[in-house]
Image 1: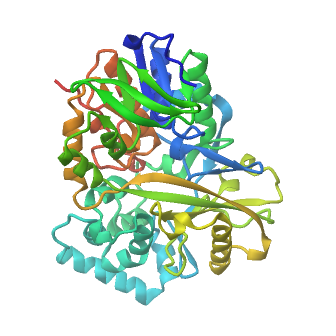
Image 2: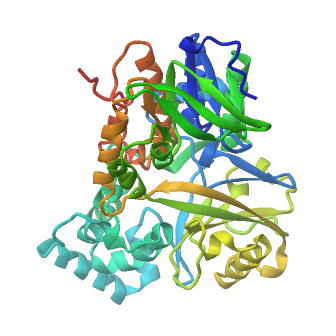
Image 3: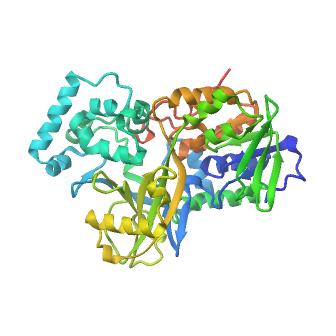
Length: 485
């Protein structure tokens, strides 16, 4: 329960959201001797990086590998969990038409699975786009087609991407592809298969660290450290109003068990969805700002956890399901992340992941119907006998992914310009910045925000703005954005 009555508001840092960004900010602030209050709208810490539990089976809301080239982030992980990390060998494949394809694509594996004629057609399609590229290259379909050819785009990218985002690939902005899969192309895949690169850059792809009880273990431990250092972490405390005087945020109203509590502070950090923040301002933001906020969209997510009477099913950590005949988009095998995620060694726990919009037919379906759907699709894909499924549970995650659709850039800029008038407000994390950040970049925004409170001047919007997915090995060991004048 938040109790700021005994705190001097002129010294209090108020953090909204207890995901990776919010808890990292709170932890760094506490270590710097600041007074901190964290407000989390749900009953679980970690945001999309939480670990849910059902009958002792633990499962992620999506898989979360712990890898980074940011030294500060790596140091915090080690400080908090130490030797409770496991080193996990990565295996992820694409399931398409009953066959498995390695991801990233391996030419020989793809050749065998597709057959000679289809493979030659893919190469011809790629060569055609080299001569006649898609222009303008401003959306996902054009970006990928220019690097892999239109035929491979249709086989390996179109169906899965549209499952994830729920909109046509031509409506997804190219910068999302540039951020997530930069450096990959058909030519590069073939070249790397024929000529081993002298400098191996993929160690963080081939292996990764993982907490023995899932990513939620990390954020539960960080929460406990924040509390031990004197910070206050209030759960089930959604912020319903942000009060301001035109240039500074003065307080927030949170709905807590038993009523509504006003929390005044000196500095405010928000990892809440920027659209929700804009609408909760009091006095209200101008209508044009609210209209811009409404043009920022999110993709929601649910996972169906299936408990299966089988010791082993398949070796993958996760499988991307490109087959259009089923609605499941990805399947996690949590036992292959950590054996401790599954309490009974004779059982396997799978996470059947469905991408949806809050309020649509998947989101509103009854849990037992979703478990039945996931069981039926698992059998249809040939990955397990449905008769071996003995139990299941469902977890829904709203606003899991900020959408990079048409017009989002201009809408985000309009909201950002308005919020920058508040000198004591900083936005952090994936939804705070409406940027598809991974866990480590979200944490970095929080670390830099606390440095800003200590007198440094970092532009948080520059974190991960290079549109380069850091698995490709090009992010600096110490990623610090340019300082603002």
